[in-house]
Length: 565
Image 1: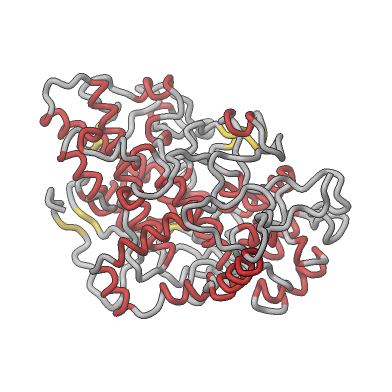
Image 2: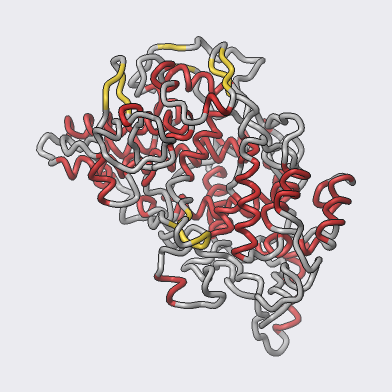
């Protein structure tokens, strides 16, 4: 078997051609065309701006980007971003945990997570190929020494807990590792934005959650407000500790959402939105049966989700002055595959537990983790508006740079490191090369300082032996940013391919009839986080993925909602 692991040259791929899914091979050229082609390729790579330079460009010069955002150039740049990022993801999928070569099983068996790079071969001299020490450092030691928070470091971009809980809620529809089969397998067979966390990941669970009247989901009314039903009313499996009464256990599409009030908050908002959309569709189409109302409402909510994710969630993460745009028609003239497969590298990358604070502030009350986890009364006691307002005002932690994970959730990061070893993920530098970045030559270059770099050198022995997940979290952050270069350059292609690869973004689906007419189509195209909240509450709190700007008045704490939002 081949050792070292395949090395990936730093190439610029044309936007219409996907990046190769195996080691790049030089095309066969003959005659006088060969030198000219090689010179052109060399020159193009030489002139290609680095990811760091592009990030600097996109996060500086606000006045310039305000002009760009008001012109057709915005669409041109957005199309370029979407195609360039998406083409870095192999499609159809290539490898999985069982197959380091192209196989029908890798393509057809959706029980597997796919993988971008094949695994490190079993017979290599070191765990990471040929570099580094014979044994990897203890995962617990890595967690305590490099990831454990000393003092809370807020995200300098102003990201808040409303964002953090959205991230957890949103990603748990497609990150559902199978505990029975192992870390290379998933229970989320939709592999994308299918809203299985709202409707359930199988038909039996969906049926238990549905009212089977007017397309709606089951619900209960508490203090005059709509909330998810109890498990007595919708008997689905939910993970709650023993001792919590069934009447206090809320039943939703994802079985783990009882863990955090922030997750059940979003489950409640999307439940209300689904039933609100059903009312509007029923008024527009009074002859439609329950099934058509339900299915059309689901498509509308999928569209609303993608719109919010691209234009607000990813926008907040990026820190770009270029205003991102959700417009599937931008890709209609490009070669693009409307399918997606979740990769194990994407699952690894998305362990963003540094976002979590030391405690949770709701109004004047501060809650510890012990008081917050599995708190089944907080959502109803405070109400949706109060929690939205509180979570929108509390800062989330910086993800990159290391040493910012609260001790209550450190074990999750440690398990991620152990999983990556079971999956035999290739070294961090191999992924940098695969996604068009220059590999780091030293730990000091990675971290931007000397103390942590020296300790990493002692434990790993070689920068080319550094593991994928520790590399992502310990990489120095961009100035005033939530994380570093690699998290953006590796994460963005997975994210954008998964979002725009959704069937509703295809020419066959992206039309008014898919969403019940112009009304439903317009709901998708104008969706915002504020609408999601304020059209489903009696009053409209401060709601954003960004903490309030201290130099600006964010308005009254609550205001009357408007159907014109």
